[in-house]
Length: 110
Length: 121
Image 1: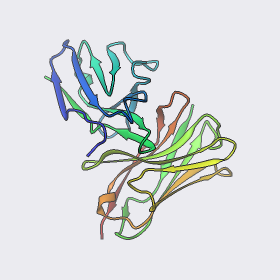
Image 2: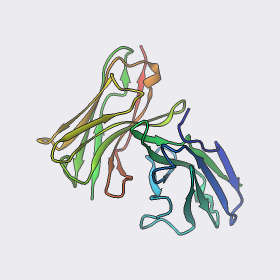
Image 3: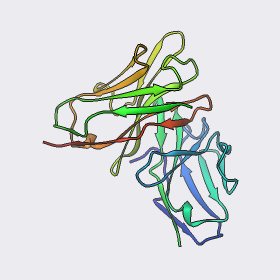
């Protein structure tokens, strides 16, 4: 069981906006920034959002992140078929003294 | 551009030791702004951070609670690489293992190619 809680699945139609939640606690999201990773099948995770809401260069502005209290969210607007893959949140946990991840959300574009 | 090339076994017997190495190019294992990590991924446990090493005037080695006591991470400056040793493996350790760098933005920005390890007799 992952320390950060994500819904196992999410879905939307092309052009729609979808959000993926990530719930934690005061020892991780409540105190530290959240990063989001996108993982295509058979590949390593790729950084999508860092520091709660920052996009690395090359990541489309359709992807955005936010954080409030002990929860964070990833929003994808203008959904495209190539967005259909797995998404993970991550944060440092001060109590565990280590990085923790969400269980991942599989996004389906209907 | 930093690249990580990892190597290790695909099959390990229960109770044996799993050993991986990760060779760094484009940066130094002694970098004072990076940390070098091991992460694994399995259907049952998801993404799991195992530990890291970094140099800040001295070497630091930090391990996840879940594997503490069985894990050792080493750094080798002569070969510019770091390694993972996991002892007394069980089928629960079956996973894809990744090495990854943690850069200045506190993110896992570069990953190795990943290696599937099966623990089975």
